[in-house]
Every structure is written in structure tokens, then in C-alpha cells.
Length: 118
Length: 107
Image (cartoon, rainbow over all chains, first blue to last red):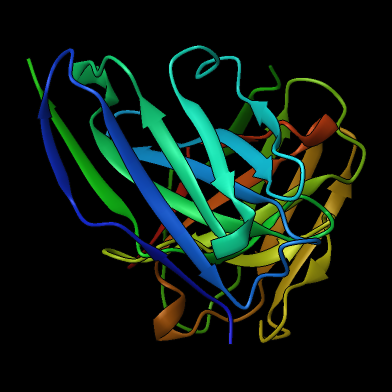
């Protein structure tokens, strides 16, 4: 059974750093990309970026390039989303999800609520 | 970046009725279009990918069609569990975007 388990909710202040995680059981470390999607009431679902854990090949949305860093530890089938200087506009629910061969997301994590106060 | 627009924003229908949801891309995306369903407090669920292929476990009442820039999700007879928000998603060149969603409400 495929399961993506994300780290818990976070509350931070503007300017602080943060790293959230997503562990995938049932993912093949040699086959599956892992992606991140943000959801906010204002903008709905936003595609953040994806990573291929075997070689850390990463693709970012232009909207998120330079704002976040996606990394992975293939030995433990875990992907990460990292901010160095949070802004209030980073507030939202962040989902990780597994990509199938067509680059669509078939299994999703439960979501991590990130709240940033200014 | 490819922009997706969805219409209508809200669709109010009764159980058993047919729902037709539209998604338009700002440029051609071949058939690289997927549909997701999301219910309150839950993560999205993949329904359709590659325009018309149902994901594993998705009932046959869900169907997708289209190509290029215009796509449609049809729910042939709404069940109570189908009232939710539906998003289209494109992943051209392995960089994706989502549409703003269509809410299907009970009339």
C-alpha cells in the first residue's frame, strides 16, 4: 500500500527558516518522482515543484523558483521542502504527492499547514 | 507558464443529473490534462489523466475528453459523494499548473 506521511503543522515568523518532510512508503526510490503542491483560499492549488530522488533532478514552477528548495534522501524515501526566509505569503497547506509516469499525482500526503506571521 | 481556466465556477445540480465541466488552456497541451476531485478537509484525488484515462478505482460515470486547448470532464449521473470541487491540471514539459476549480453543489 502506498502512503505518503507528512510532518506536522508549523507556525513561524517572517524571516525564519523551515523544512517540512514527506516520507513515502510503497514508492520505488528508482521510479517515482515526488512533488509539492500548495493550497490557499486565495489561489487554490499551485504546483510548486518536483524531485526525482535517485539523482535529485528537480523542476520548479517559475512562481516558486528561488523561493523554496526541494531536496530528497533516497535512502529513506523522503522528500523535503525548505524555506530560508519565510514570508506571510508562504502561508498555506502544502501537500506532497507521488507522480505516475505521466507526471500526474496519484497518491497524496495528508498535507502540512504552514502559518507564517509577519 | 500555461494558464488553465475552468468554467463554470459553480455548478448546482441534483443527484442523478449529468455534470459537464470545462477547462481551457492558454496554449496547446496536447492531451496532457488531468482532473482531480477534492472534498473538504481532504487531499485531491486523481480521477482522469491523459485527458480520458480513468485512474485506478474511478467509476465509469467519470469521463474526460478534449485535446489541444479545450477539455471536458463529464459525470454521467451525479451520486451524493460526487459533490465536491474539481480541478484540472496540466503538466506540459514536466512543469505543471492547476485550474481555479469548479465547485459542484447540490441544488
